[in-house]
Amino acid sequence: METARFFLNGEPRSLTVEDPDEPLLYVLRDRLGLRATRYGCGQGLCGSCTVIVDGRAARACDLPLWSIEGRDVVTPDAGDAVSPVLGRVRAALAAERAGQCGYCLPGIAMSLAALFAAEPAPTGAAIRAALARNLCRCGAHPRVLRAIARLEHS
Ligand code: FES
Ligand code: FES
Image 1 (cartoon, rainbow, N blue to C red):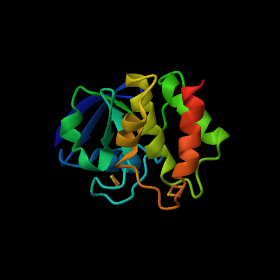
Image 2: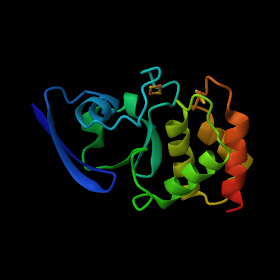
Image 3: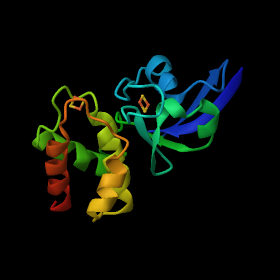
Image 4: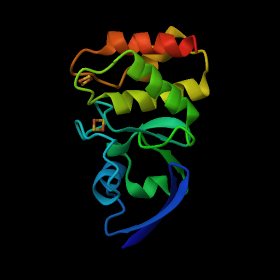
């Protein structure tokens, strides 16, 4: 048994698990009931499970619980008060109806929130790099790009 302590959406959390290698994605979804972080490939490839750790986008399926000890984790469940930039991203995605099935959108929102928090006016190259590992099976990226344009002008 091992206890992990970290911050989750602005609140201190402490969790005791048998296997400290358990991926953060499973901890969020199965132990804490935070289902907005989506399971896609489970191999760090699709971006559906993207969260923000210490300000940087990260794949929750690829993060063992031990690796977030003492760190600050933000998930798509975070309210606008916890992450105002995530609130802006969500509003822009909703305004453009950016999803089709919507499965990829929480991960895309997290990647964009990390980007815009670090760079309020990112270059096209920075936007492409930030979204390079967020796959959309429905091909909704053009609408996502329209949402980004809203963000850039808001
Ligand atoms: S589920 Fe984590 S990257 Fe696909
Ligand atoms: S909107 Fe369906 S996977 Fe992106």
